Length: 308
Image (tube, rainbow, N blue to C red):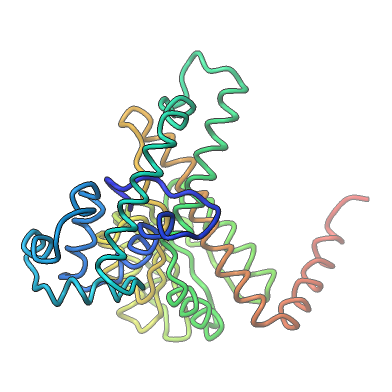
């Protein structure tokens, strides 16, 4: 999650646009020492544009050599390049912040909003969520998820609340692609199905917070039975990640407290559906002919069930 760092913009992939994206994409997969450096930079970008490696190392309680390793880990050539990238990002943000604040300083839906205002706010939120999810997505983890799906006999989906929208979408997608898929609908069936999972199964646990007890428990049970587990969540330190063999992170954008329910219900499921669509599309591309055949077969059945 980008904290003190400015929001990222799409467009030319210049250094000032990419430096925080580079950190944001890697942060969930860094070791504790490198993670402290990433956290410090994202929380204190203004200070980090001018401090030395020695000062940054002291602030993060790491060796100077660890700073050098961090720079290489995020794909930059030197510490100087990192500082330049931070400075340019902050400068670009200062130049554009006024117009951004004028348009979106009050992002929450209010009682007096017109339909036109609501359209702009909802569209902006969803685009922002998908963009930040793209920045956080680790392609290596995505590839592992596709491989696990390929090897699975059955895909089990575990979710609660608004995350069920993504799970329903996932079941429909993969069933049409020829993969036996099940959505575990209530606490009892969820836990029982996880308890009898096998190494030939994959369980996909979806929870924005990563703290839904039933989802976490199902992941723990399935993993203990040898099933592969894929977690989709926003938070790196959540309990869900502990029981995820493969973890894919969505946007961790927070909203004002008064609109927390809206943000949870709307934006988080947009990101979750995006991640599942990416897994599905990658699977379908790797198994193109087989997937196409299954889609044609399922289409015939669906077409025959519709009224003329």
